[in-house]
Amino acid sequence: MNISCPRYLVSFDVRALPHFFTDVLIVGTGLGGLRAALAVSRSQSVTVLTKADDILLSNSDRAQGGIASVLDPTDKFEKHIQDTLIAGGNLCNLDVVTRVITEGPKRIAEMIRMGTHFDLHQDGSLDLGREGGHCMNRVAHAQGDATGHELVRAVVEQTKTAPNVRVERNAYVIDLLLSDGRCVGALVETKRYGRIVYWAKQTILATGGIGQLYRETTNSAIATGDGMGVALRAGAKLRDMEFIQFHPTVLYVAGSSRHLITEAIRGEGAYLVDRNGYRFMPEYDPRAELAPRDIVSRSIVAQLEKTNSPTAFLTLAHKDPDKIRARFPGIAAFCAQFGIDITKDRIPVRPGAHYMMGGICVDTFGRTTVPGLWAVGEVTSSGLHGANRLASNSLLEALVYGVAAGEGASVAASKITDESLYRVRPISSTLPKKQTPLNLADMTNSLKSLMWRHAGVKRNRELLDDGLEQLDQWRRYTLSGEMDNTEGWELQNMLMVSELLMQAALLREETRGGHTRTDFPEMRDEWHHHITFQRNDDSSITTGEEPV
Image 1: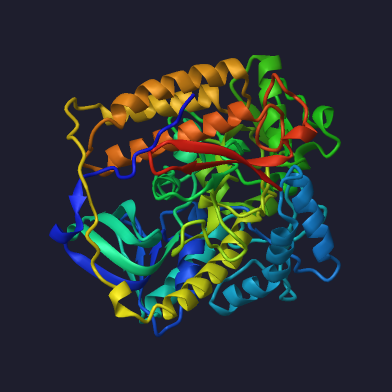
Image 2: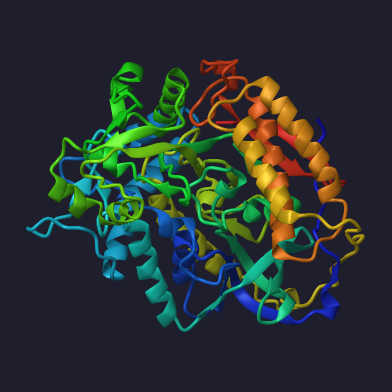
């Protein structure tokens, strides 16, 4: 199937719009984006945009379990590196893995100095937990199960006192702007100013993941793949789009939002049981509940099929109830709203889309293939996670790459001293208006259901072929004209990213990491490479292969 992609989503002429100028433009207020903002020189102006009304709304803020690093004298970098490589299905970049893991303790120490309060033992040492895929206790956590929130809180407080950083809420980036092949800023729809142009010497994307492509997800409402969409249209290379991590344990209660039940709860000894109370994980993997997430997710789905049940269950009834309430206060409180006492009742769970391993290709400093454009965090394919992310490595990646991209963009911006490069360019676009109004909510829900059925935990050629045929039909009339609101642009981005995801899943005829093909159930040596996508000047998409 041929995939095409427009250059812009809307008609515009920058000469008719208000302009703002900044040295570094950052899109996204998760941990990676805000840490990047703090790494830029105080002598340079930084503008941070978020499409949300709340600066805290991000996947980073929702991260429960913790941040993994070698923080105990009995642990070693080599062990953490090996655990990461094993989880990554032999698709990780060893240099990237080594750099992120060895730099981790330094970045966590910085966060402590910035005011992050991790959970401690009585002697003042870090209370380190263990999660699936780790051979050691190396996961630092905060407030029991609110680590992401605590880390983001700390960088938000630092951002508020940084005189060179300005945060703009309710600002949706429609498209990136290029001049002479380099990124020079973005076209933005704002609540405060309407449609405007931000010109920037360097731009950093930190927009997070794509969980909202799926009916079942742990992700925040803003995780609609916008960063990947704008990067694709600007000509950046995307990679490993088939690798989605489905978190094994998402609370599944009628009437409830899908709520993550952290990996750490299994690290503390929770069992997974089926509707009959049978503990089934030892049957699928010798590591049982502490197997990597892809294995646990596939095992749950298999057991649900065996028992003809919509959910599996977590049980902590065999653990000390006081310790469980103290370790997981957030989960205990949320479950209690639905009459579930996590210390004695079974918690109904099933897998949900959780983390995107693929995304925008970046080098070890966060540079994309488009000059002037950087990216950090879940929106990227950095080489750290490979085919499957090791638990709690994502917040670590956000810190390490946030610093690298912030410092790198700062240096690059300082070298642009010719003010003629810091000017309004005559960039414009003309598109036909959308003639037939669409029910955007219905379209979005239909897309989520399609992705869950055809590109979920288990995939095969028939499902993917049928899914791509439906996506192609939707794309033809959804992208045929200009939409005029955030919901429409989000849907267009979701369709583009969904099509790349399904196409990559169809091409990869094997099972590896987060990608499971029931018609190709084994890992195959001939697929030991990355699948890439890149937009051409004629709007077509080139599919390629890249060595590991």
